[in-house]
Length: 232
Image 1 (spheres, helix red, strand yellow):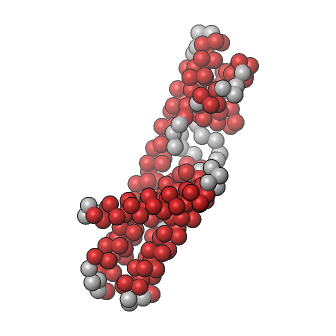
Image 2 (cartoon, one colour):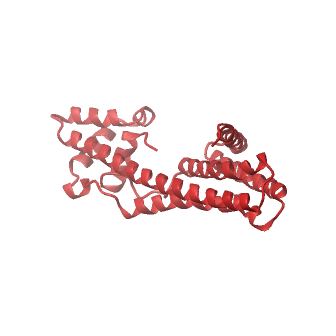
Image 3 (cartoon, helix red, strand yellow):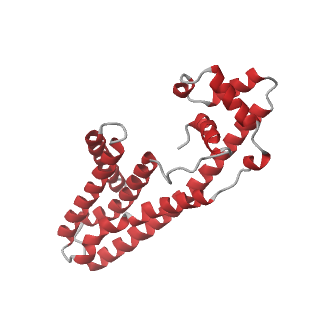
């Protein structure tokens, strides 16, 4: 989430204020990570039923545990997202303050260059850096306030919902079937499909959808197996 003094500077230019621009609530990598975490959590509970002959009481306990765990994890993740947003804004403010306090134009350009990723910096000329410098020099004080905005809370809510709502497709088979073994098989197929679909969607951004789809599926299953093996 955070590469990125450079992204901060570019975002500042685009929005004329310090911090993150109005962007998609979560980028593809963020969405994939949240989905992966949520699925791992719930599969840890559902697959625990496979180690013994589970009765209705065990299924009920699993459902309550899975929902409670993902509610708690969703809240934690949402709070961490808000804290990360604030941290990114503080970094961006420090960058702009350093530019404005620079002793010379060349020193200011050096600050900007130091905040940019190498690949982005290589595409910018000295005049581009100077245009950025002039823009940042003229930012008014009210644009440099470090505070949470409505878009941050919308993003945090989305983080929570991604983690929480993913519980239901995976646990639904247990709500409609008394055969725990069959329900577990259907549940695992749904979870595997969600893992692959998430990886496939993410992979479309890099041009390798099938590869990333299979990779995310494999990683998710290995992590679930590891957690269960460790008693999680």
